[in-house]
Image 1 (cartoon, rainbow, N blue to C red):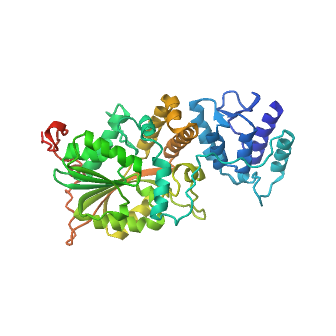
Image 2 (image 1 turned 120 degrees about the horizontal axis):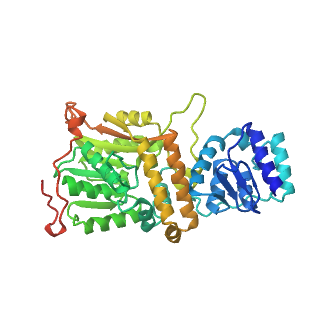
Length: 453
């Protein structure tokens, strides 16, 4: 086995024409690679079978989610994922596949011969149970979208509370210099959105994809709005409604189990869409943008907070992450920020501001990973070991993707101008970021009437 570990690592390095700063430990405890390198542990032969049948990101993910592959420490996970981002999707790795029709080069044939002698080769292992199985249905039809959203969000509100913390905000925080905690940074993000939207007491806000209601609560408590939130996650809606009642805001905040394409009661003075547009899909984005425009009153603002991918390079088509598609956000699609801005403008919006929060999301994701690891036994009990491993893998990988500028996150502020072309925005950014007068949080004993300080 010690010889196999050395030969395995050496063959992959020969294939890539590059040294790999990685230490590999096989199932019998033997190791190969630099002593000070991050450690990758293959617990059994099935780990290699996952990698050989699906070389690259998907095979790594299946082996990790199954528990057949592990890293030496929490820190090693980030280092191993950084290496995977560099090497896993190289065409030389894909050539190792045992799938039908794949041609093996000389290095691949030598490697497979060694694995055959070691008793590693066998039929392809079944994917972990956590892999999405949405069934039929047209892409981004309402029924298929409900199934995709349920796969990700209906895994238990208590599990999400462990990961996200008390704020229950599942989007990137806003790390102002004085922010000392994730909770403070999430409160700052909610407030930033409210200020960009120009919320004032008595205004009517629509939050599309409202999650567990945190933005609705903040806007009603601190800006005095009347708010409607919609989500197609049954578990999110149940908890959001509970939180609204506990805050004494039942008279001013409504949470609906409803698709954004089914909202009948516009217009609204402001619309927020935070972490929702990634689920819409390219084929539906025009419907999404035009629908939100119709739901806004003239002069109303839209705040669209959305993850973006990098534009396609010349001659190189975009390939979505197979791990994210199969395990995390099935049917989710990322667009470059320029495409999002163009789509909003094509629908009739005037885009007034774009702010990148890329580094903020990397910090947020590392906080979520820390929360998950700090409560690991409870997370496994609530969601199952495989699901907890999916979330740990995807959040750590996403943190690196933001840090390494492979994906970004942007807040786009757009306006539905009046018939005369007026935006009703103040003259300067400093003015419209100043926000409304600070309101006392609503006292449940006093009903739903905020008071201005």
